Length: 223
Image 1 (cartoon, rainbow, N blue to C red):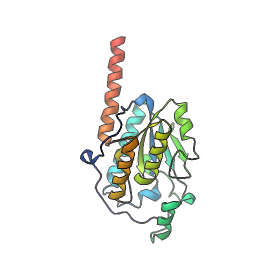
Image 2 (tube, rainbow, N blue to C red):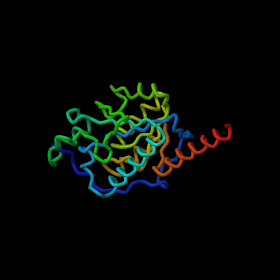
Image 3 (cartoon, one colour):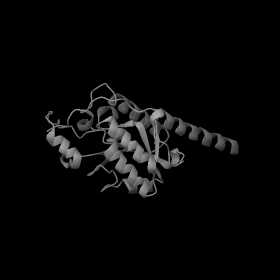
Image 4 (spheres, one colour):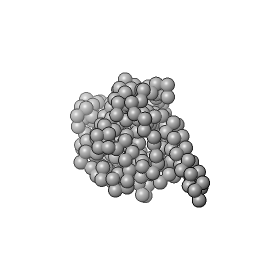
């Protein structure tokens, strides 16, 4: 069966971010963007045009646009429909919603991967597990990872934790992730903040642009 409907809830803003425990600074030349689980089968469970999915899609698109402009690797991780497991499998089996369409596992059209971007099929919510994500980041000299997408307390949290344990600094975007409920969303951000950085989309975009401006100014000054 399909996935159960998720009730609308407001996206967190800067005032509700958990207190940071680390003081890392984002650097585009060190960073890759991971867009996790933004598939039709998951997005369709949210109320169309309402919070949090409205902000989720817009903010992920904004991050993806700037990442491309700054030359940052953009990586999509997507779960094949036949590999639903754990809580996702349980939710699917207990739902009375419609069966997923044949393109249920595709990344939503607004964010469809482009040439030069990477699409990984992950067999567990943790995007590093049984994938070549770690190898891809190392091959491109990236030791920082922006994580956005679905679900905050599953794939986003587990991926961020795995990154931190492998010397990759995770930056999770509070209003570019979503979850089954506001409570689970908030819980995930609190856990991430113990070993990573939590930012809003606007805040992170400003930091990336400011870093680029400083590097360009420094380069021009040395020339």
